[in-house]
Length: 199
Image 1 (tube, rainbow, N blue to C red):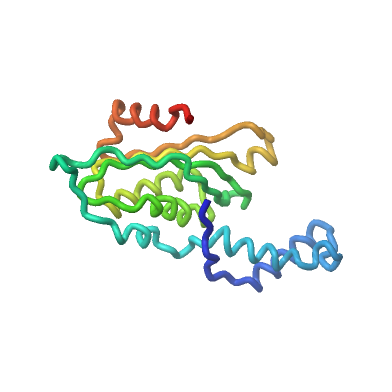
Image 2 (cartoon, one colour):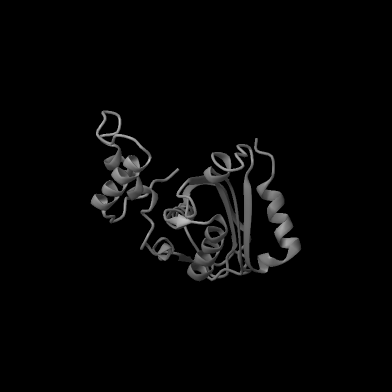
């Protein structure tokens, strides 16, 4: 799994806010186990939210011109099991899982390592899984102008597993499609490939 470079954050403000939270729950921020907690939280927030202000199109800028040997347009490109983690904007709790990203090239293709970078950049900000799925699809549609895009995210959410209903084994699946991959038959074939048994 790739990691983000922490973006510019106001670490001092985060540290002050964490001190207030610790005091508000009745803790002593000065006790040995908590003295470095504000700094640790600020550092981790730099990683969690490093995608803020970053345009995912930077990862697609070096796409290459492509044409199939036969002269036809390209067949499906599918990258499965891209690990990601994000922070739910409702409770600032983590959600994590895997993304499956498929596209039908028209005249442009991208190095396979660039697709996880797009996922990572869009995940590294306060998010909703539904919106993240759509944003990944939109980024690929804009950056590559493919004939079709399909994105499926499967994730477990801290706000579901660790609070409220506490459903620790539940997962959420979201899907976004563009172009030709909105067609039910095309979509069903890709979904079968995503779910195919691994060796």
